[in-house]
Image (cartoon, rainbow, N blue to C red):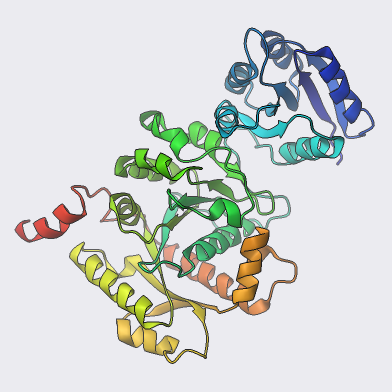
Length: 419
């Protein structure tokens, strides 16, 4: 690295500060520019010395590390904070991320872990214009050929569980991010989401962390709760760490979130639950397009057919729904052509069946489109799916006639005749 990373160490124990300094002293690209023993001193030194990275302990007398981090993030947003703590409880992690921290190290940690965290956070630091919004575009990514004046929301949905929606959503989102589009992936299966596992990410923050501040939701708050997928630069909003925490998320939260995301991102990809409750319906209502995933099986086609009947009752435009077939194979008695014929809808994309490859990708936490030994049919299939999205949405004005409907799914269905 050509730049020198200027680091400030904050801990109330002088011995700890000195040990951390020693771990960094032989790194030519890292310079320790100061040490602080209190939160108050950390704030003062941060203003004076403008470090690139602050290594911040949580438990300190006076202003603790959380309070100091929040103050520094508000007044000097260019400074990136890494929290150090013996506490690894998820609540500590969420509070740290909400206060502006970009990473979390559990004591005791080794030199390699510390140095890797510093370089990772520094490499992913945002380019600050006025506000601290992470760009999410990784080094070496191809610049997007065209940007959107207002972002597009794509909901990946299947009425049949196990159809592979999470795999489709993740690989679409990663593919868009790698092309240089500013993209966020949202795990909308709030009770039992798998995005964190399939991307090998720890749930430091989630959708729950914005619910109590939903009326104040803005780009800065979103940036404080999203996490960065290091291998792709994709920004990710994860599902809550516990199923019962999903109960606080409402239709209004979903609608307000989408309104905030549109000006921030070119694409927001939502991996939805197959359970069609009020919250899931709000995602579908407020999405510009629904990527409807089916398979070459009768149970899957039956459920997709019923979903199409539902969308007719909800007055969704046919163009709002993109039908795609996942895990295609010639072994099935039903061909892709038969799927289109049976549903009387065009199929806009197919993903070939590679169960072993996808299972390994899920277990390793590495999307198939990022794997070095990735197979061309798979990456080519996702590339075509993304190409379709870009082409279809190129002239789209984001005028979603379904967005903002309310009254509950049953009220909307049974009350429509009297409108």
